[in-house]
Image (tube, rainbow, N blue to C red; front, side, top):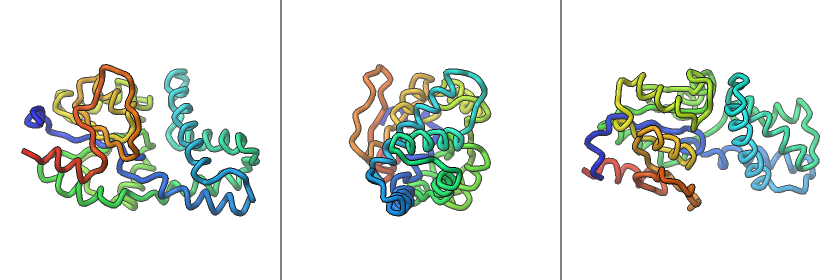
Amino acid sequence: MKYLPSVKALTFDLFGTILDLGRSLIPHINRFLDAQDAQVTGDKLWTQWRARQRIEQYQDTIMSLGHSGYLTTVRRALVYTLRLNDIEPTDDVVSKLMSAWQELSPFPEVLPALEKLADKYTLVVLSNGDPEFLDHLIKNRVSCPFDHVFSVNTVGAFKPHPGVYLRTASILGLETQQCLMVSANSFDVMGAKACGFRAVFVNRYQLPYEDTDYQPDSTVSNFTQLTEVLLSD
């Protein structure tokens, strides 16, 4: 790919890109629903939960009333989703389901790919997660020696706020075109591209991309293909 010589740093989304949220959380959700004798399936409740979380994040940023933090929006989304399915969101129920987020695991091909990419690029986590939560996940669940781990808390807004990407490039001492965003979230790719980043969309589930001028430079289905693209020269 012709832009590769200028790229110095790869900035990675964490949730849903490196960490497999569905595979990590749905078993916990299923055990909870079985005990509740609920009518909704674990897959459906997770889909609703994840979609509502994104709405919570957008609302948080747009209203500019103070950055709530990642796990706060996850919790708010859970309460909404439980009520949507006629399940009482007691403190005990919410606490048990929220605790599962401490056990997130990466997609199986991610770590070998990161090891290969580390030989050529600076590897950066650029995440909506809270700093302490990111520290736990990187140390105990991913175990990859990233060069930098950046939380959006330094900006006070969730991705795709432009300040997130611009601040990251500034801290790295790089021009935006020297940074490449790797994300499974299309809004993240779009946000990075709008700020001058290069970007790769990791489209594991064959989802449609936004109708926008800010298209990814490449689309891959997993991190194995990502290494083929980025190490092709």
